[in-house]
Image (cartoon, rainbow, N blue to C red):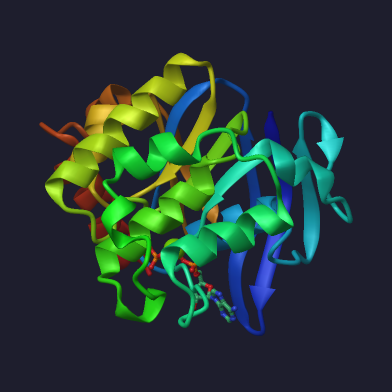
Length: 237
Ligand SMILES: Nc1ncnc2c1ncn2[C@@H]1O[C@H](COP(=O)(O)OP(=O)(O)OP(=O)(O)O)[C@@H](O)[C@H]1O
Ligand SMILES: [Mg+2]
């Protein structure tokens, strides 16, 4: 469904993505892992056309994405940092979104899921960080696309909201959706992900099962496997 070939992206002298190749063609949940600053957000923004890459190719459903925008209707995207107009209430934010893109398929269900009815008349500037993140999630999920890309969805969520998010993602996975999940929370990866992709030094260092990654590193669990990779990388750089 998503095919990235020889992708390069530099921010001035900072060569972030280096001939990166990645194929995501199975439904289910893939966790995209990698240290801070390794290019995860840059990669997913490139897939969405929000970052203009230097060279390389990105295909969605076998079609070139460069210069295109309609393919984005097939992708629900949760940005890592949501910046909403501060003076709008939650209700007005949702109305604004619906005026741009009518007919959400499941607004009410999502407001119930994240217990947001009581927050609808609060201004964004007055909301707690976790509540803003819940609105971020509602905006992401309400149009029901076949591909879901989530950049650190658990940020700021309390345990109840996290349980709701996990249950929601498991239901979406059952419907055959393709979900790309960026997170540093390894419990979440172990609980949810079918596969992991590990990005390091601008390339894909590993793509495959969690069990196989742990075995490759010859350690007991995912946390130690990831820490080992990061320590080895730091020692070599
Ligand atoms: N708009 C930008 N202008 C200049 N440099 C940028 C920009 N966006 C990202 N970078 C740089 O690109 C590199 C990759 O950043 P990116 O945000 O993709 O990392 P990340 O893997 O998502 O990290 P994190 O885990 O902290 O979210 C970093 O060195 C960052 O400073
Ligand atoms: Mg990021």
